[in-house]
Length: 122
Image (cartoon, rainbow, N blue to C red; front, side, top):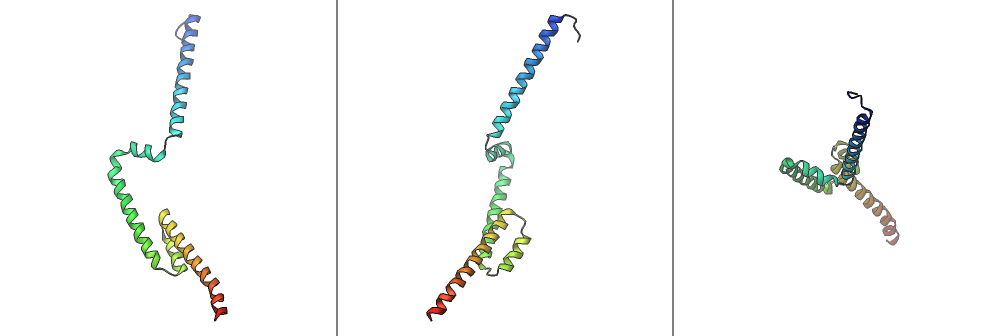
């Protein structure tokens, strides 16, 4: 708007459109590269200074899950496991507890299926 020459205005508008097109292409390329980038790898690369801390937390979580798993093996009551499930906050803990409940229920069903066979054979 500062110039009155129409040819110069056309060149300026054309240059502005070209810059906008290039910016749009860069944005699309950046979006495409983010879309296909593996999430974990990019997160770890961006957050290198937190590696030791996050690795330590992962190890602690694994140890806690292993301890929980050993504890779940000793529990034989579905209701007690259900109480643990309701109190658990972490996804992995809940996953382990649900698996223990399924295992107990399967054992109960298997025991009920074997009982009539044993009674009939005696």
